[in-house]
Length: 296
Image 1 (cartoon, rainbow, N blue to C red):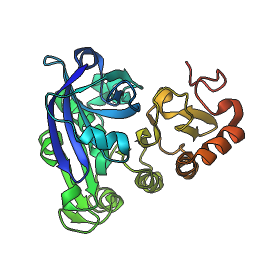
Image 2: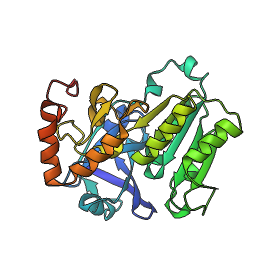
Image 3: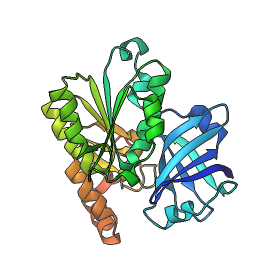
């Protein structure tokens, strides 16, 4: 059992929890995720790691209520426990693997949309701890939906907040802020890392491609079982078939077929849709087939 040490509501239907999971905390890196089960019969829910404390043995998760399982998660309080808390899973952020001296010379821009602020935060924090300050754009629908602003402000070089309705910070989409920083302010960035809803990441990539700004995206929004076996997070990345949970979750944003991914996500929600996807995709429907690399 994995004890919940802290349970906090961040915004409407968005919750943060600190969970005592020493083995996960000892090995996880920014960009990775865990799989949580409430009880023996509970659904497996993949959640990105928002933060971790190796000394305290804790891992911080942030989740949004989207179904019955996350609704049950939201009812938990400090002192309650999860049955399973498995990880770390997925590949760490490429930043963690880079040569530190080369990384310190780069100018990095992060773009977080909605709950995407949660997986962006540990990467920005990790960079800050290594003496690298990155610029961060955080977008939300309204001020009330904004999360982790103070935490992000403490580790970002510059933080730019924008809301769709103009209720806080700048008014408009995150893409407008990217254009402002690059075209109006003349900022140069070596890489952009965008995490959020797929439609946001799609339009960020369309813009950054015009700006010739290499962009990495995290496809964690489409993960379901976290092992590659369910076929939910099958992706077309360039000429290759990839699975977000075992090959990612981060990919070259220019190569991701967002339209296909969004269409698949809608189809996957129904039993008929899942059956059709399995029929159409054959042996490459899941990552354990041995033909696509997802089982490596």
